Amino acid sequence: MAQLPFVDMRPFAGERGERLSRPTWPAPAVGHEFVRRFGAVSPTPGGGLRPWDGEEYFCRADAAIGFQRSPTKEPGARLEVVHRRLFFNGRTGRVELAFRTPDRGNTADVARTVAELRVRVRGARPCAFFEAGSPLTRLLLSATTPVARRGEARKTRLIVAGMPLVLVERRGIRGEGLVFPMEDPDGGVLLEHVLTGPSEIPAALWAVSHGNASDKLAIKAVRTHAIRLHSEYEAFAAILRACLRKDIDPSASETLRDYLHTASRRMLRASFGGLPQAGVLAEMAKARAALAPGESDSLEAALQEIRPSLRRLVLDAAHLRADPVDGTENRTLHFNVITNNFSEGAIVTVNSNSNNISIGEGAQVQGVVGSGNTVTNSSFGDGGATRDRLGELVEQLIAQLEELGPRVEGGTEDQVELARAAQEELQRDEPKPGRVRGFLSSVLLGVKEVGQAAKPVIETVDAIQQLVQ
Image 1 (cartoon, helix red, strand yellow):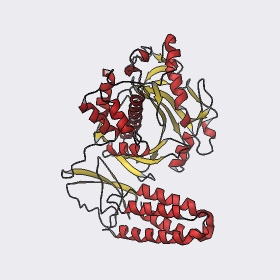
Image 2 (image 1 turned 90 degrees about the vertical axis):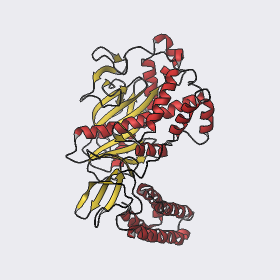
Image 3 (image 1 turned 120 degrees about the vertical axis):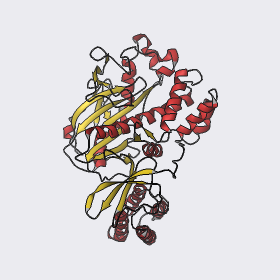
Image 4 (image 1 turned 90 degrees about the horizontal axis):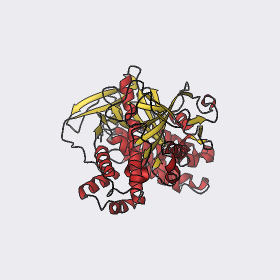
């Protein structure tokens, strides 16, 4: 599943934001309404998903976006097109492309193939999928603006594309993602943050993992939840930046103030629609902060004309400063536990208000999921022995890198710093395995060129990665 999210800020712009009255989003008339240059309105198979609005209907997008060549011939992964759709609720929306692939390769490789897929947006030059947001929003702006207003509308920045998202769905609970920010505890469906693409591929890459017996509705719920959280976060960030540019003015638009209030309150909740969201939003914020450094003061100034309570709420949401979860109440924790007898992982549920929870002899915590819950101290399930061994191995790695320095062109100072960053992460109360693996992967990239001399470093990194599951 790949999506290009966008936000339409014309409802906040008064007369400057005039658009066609049909379709009547978020409840368009099936069989009677359509989006010009995209397609007709149709009901979503299986219906929508409450409480998310705008999921009940879609417009076909086959006429708006096509492919430069058949996706089945892509070298990275053979892709069979399932659908091309436009979802919209009158404010936030997405152009969604769904694919199937018979290739069971690395999740990140499949996602990259989708992100780099060459597409043709109507009226624009061919480009990679992750670059198609701007031409699609220009097409949508023209298609939904009265003819007399189109020239003026082209000068505005009132429909803005967000960061693309590629979401890979696969069977199997144990994943290869960096973190496990969310799970549906009833359905056993896991959402993983795989990676955020490098600068040349600015796309969020996620994976949804599930077992063969997982309920289809549970899978749909997690998938839709992730997609909409991404869309809503991107929309919120775009609207804040539009306020900074003075493209829209919250003091002059009650509709905009209502949106800021509702969106901010929703983003600060630990869960939404019965599913956790704090972990997902935290990962989004790490990858793409709603506000860049230095923008907070400017935004506060831009919001001076609205009531102080709303201003504080918006600023808190911009930084995701949600209230901490009360650790004293009884909590249900869901662990992905790897044991000697169950290599594929199993979900273990514990109801406890204790800080010390036993997970069984020889078991290992793969990831912790749920609303704001983490495992500390016993993260490796063996009374701290693994943590001690990791500390020894990282010290060994730093010494090896320093010794290898004279043999590497430019030295190994950068690699030593990366190893120390991994060491610092492992010393945290709640270390994130994905960050550690990321640092170590960068270490390897810098030393592999020296060949056999790097073998001790490679072996030590491999030993660390075996322990950091």
